[in-house]
Length: 248
Image (cartoon, rainbow, N blue to C red; front, side, top):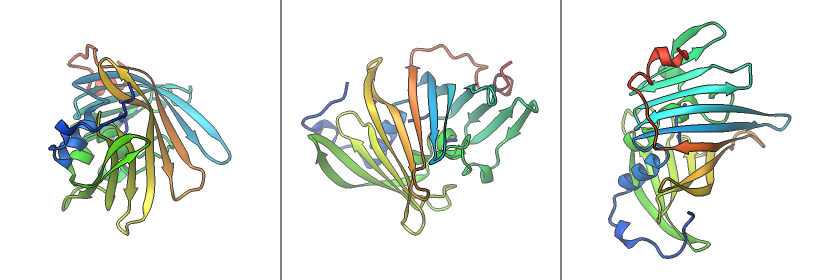
């Protein structure tokens, strides 16, 4: 569950030369921080699409930096109350049907999150792409008048990640990642996501729509749409606690 709460006035034109001196890692960090800020609260709809069916979930999420995340499912009724908590590198899930909090071991982090094309690692470990990889600008390009960096991220030795390589296409004027590709250790593309609906929210440009596509399964995709997001929110010291995870 990573990544994924996770992921900003749409600008085109000349690139910002003042930002050209930035390192690849700093560019990735700025893009990664756009949807979080120091604190945030959001309401999100996730739609999972398969060839034979489609289903949607709504949820609310609180974040504090990249270290703390709390997510609670609001609907449908079957999943209502399911919660996810991340503090540092530790993660927990609350299952109301059995009134149990489960600590998520590393082996579970690469499993599908709520049956979607995002993994637990995507949703929860928001800082992984920054801290677990080295970064290099491998290309600069212009598409439809928009200037981009293309950044290759390679895992650090012994980093707790599964990807052999991640490639990010980052918009120069606002650091918005417009596309991210995930490759396995054999350099085969496994999945990718694209962002859209870039709007100005409280002075920062952010994408409000993310769509992840699974390249290993035909017509598999998952969309995340932010219905509401604010960075001007009061989050108490007890928000990121096991008690709050259970909705108490």
